[in-house]
Image (cartoon, rainbow, N blue to C red; front, side, top):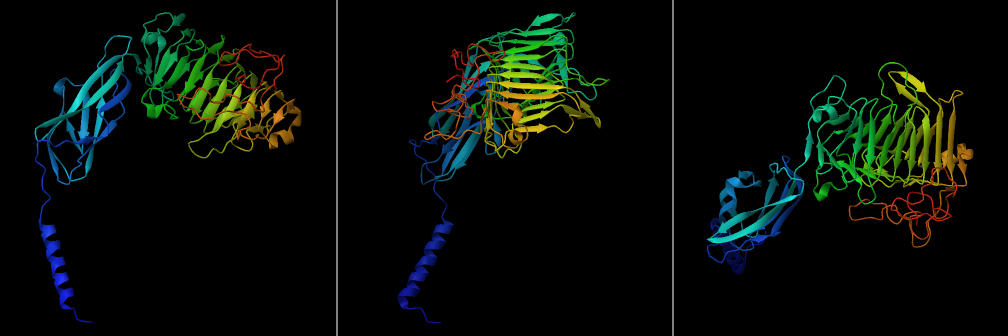
Length: 504
């Protein structure tokens, strides 16, 4: 080992002294009255908040821009005890935090929530406050703004064994005779648990009505009841999760489903949007003793969007469905599952599945004439038709047919003048496909052979619209059954209708 030179020795000693002096010296505090903090925003906005229900947490950042530590002598809500807001800083919560120190160049997050009292009014109200910061006598603030709205609330009152928790329409509105009832549409409806439509009741839902469902909640048309949804173009009826912050706009699985049981009256849904649930619609026979059979009634659904389901868009068990101008899109499992037979006709409908929240394994469409319940297999006749429709998606094969339980039973399937993506099913059952475009290829400049866009966003009004080179153009049959004269967006169909819910 070589001995240190004199210069090296002096340099080493100087380095040690410098290190010791730095380690022993505390970072100085900034004390000037000109001290100002930096904020990631000057206004923290909350989307429309329902009264009585707290929001999701919003946050903003407070940064010390100096090379010295800063002590914030107080962080308070401007309205103090009268504030509807509450905040949390580094685990400290309340309406005031004192002597908060931020190290040089460092930052802290402030988390804010808000809960509003009932206002007993239909129109939204605006609530404002501010978080105030006093630093070396210098006052700064970040504005807090929340839009609030009163609503009709539904809280479960019953939970029989084996049933979900629910309250009934008759109980909620003190109706002694179920009969026919129309829900008010002047305020949103916020539902915890299930809202059940009583036996023998017809529930009318008017244009513009909005439903917001809590986790695992839904709407349940019990056996013998009837649901009538009367939306209008540009004034649809909405069914969605109760969080209104932008983060939740396209988050699937926020609530459970709409259940439609058998009845002597049809269920009707026109101009509705059903989104972000686990299942969109479960149209199914209610097993209450005896063998299941095909329902006497049907679901008539038109001009409706069912999108972004964690599980299945439409689940049909022993049911009849008549659908026109419907878009069913983007589900993790299937867009539609048909079990136990039924009479089902889909005209000018689009089934498009481009799930983007992970890998999707199942084909979008499952077809079966049987259903297993309590270790028994029940089989009923199946008559299924698609006219001028689209069944497409990102998987190689979007159609799965279980024919293992035919056993001489009726099993009729027809895809007529439609666009489909399938390999195995087409190869096994070619007679099911008449005048169809099967597995069309894309064209230059249009990577998707059918659609302009396949992603749901609140500001994307063209999801599943056709582009100018779409393989669905002019595929339809002008004399198809139940052919609607206009498409889902209200445009007239020409003499050579395109396949799907949207005319190019």
